[in-house]
Image 1 (cartoon, rainbow, N blue to C red):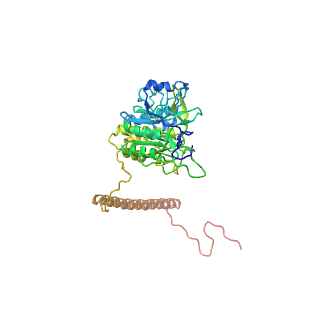
Image 2 (image 1 turned 30 degrees about the vertical axis):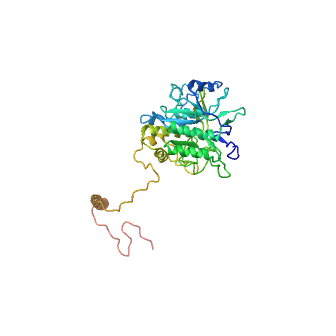
Image 3 (image 1 turned 120 degrees about the horizontal axis):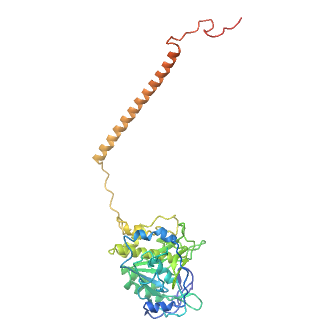
Length: 411
């Protein structure tokens, strides 16, 4: 992170590693072919046919009969998306370039994030996006310079957020800055006021020996802050801890599409954020009448309980429940109705009395049966003894003499 006054460039970190900073740039609108040229130097990665653990956990195919993200646009403010990848073709809107293209650079982060949202299914490939029919609008604000570090400017970042709010229903921000910039704060507030769902990574700067630095925009009001978990449900060790964590999602060793072709596994809150943005797209696709606040609250209310402890927020995002749950308080600040005075339900009271009488009768019958068993057992014992004596009364020993049938003592 680059420290400094707001007059200078404020560091904005891509939520996997590194820092961002640099001069502002003009806004350019690039079409798909021009976008592909930005990634001309990228080499394809090997394809991965395995079914990723994140897809096994979130079960996208279970929710697709109810929602696929159709009709919803997700703005991905990042490093751009390479549309040449077979799974990314056809669902990417024309990219908005807010920085000058740098030919010869291969930055995969934006493509990776977007692929988690809407990568298409492909035969023989286990990886696919969570909301495959959603449209991704890439807004490129970062790139890699000669030092290999991604750069942008808070002013450009703020302008990108404002632009996204006019073109998208959901804004995915897998970027973090650790200084509160008024331009970014106001842009986020404007997006929230415009009824746009803003989802942001909480960052990967967790400190075991002290409080974590405050991540922005995740810490701004109205933003859905996302932390990351591993396959065993534990928090990703670097995923930050604080009140800005609203939910968590898979973010350790998750599959992503790469520029040109193929897949890689990545870790960080960047990728967890994409799963939550895709969930928001699914909810809006199924329930287009919901407000952004309703969507955020629904995602939190339907989260799967986590291990507990700091850094998990409301729990693990659950796309199926977020889409299908019916009876929910969509506003957590809504006051609950007063509890009605308790009164006896006569039908229930009569039923309880009937069961009480039946229980008492059952106990009485049990006691009678137990008594009969004791009598029968005693009678059988008496009969055996009577037969053994030939039904003669038992003989008593003579007083002062030896008992019949026994040897007397000698004198």
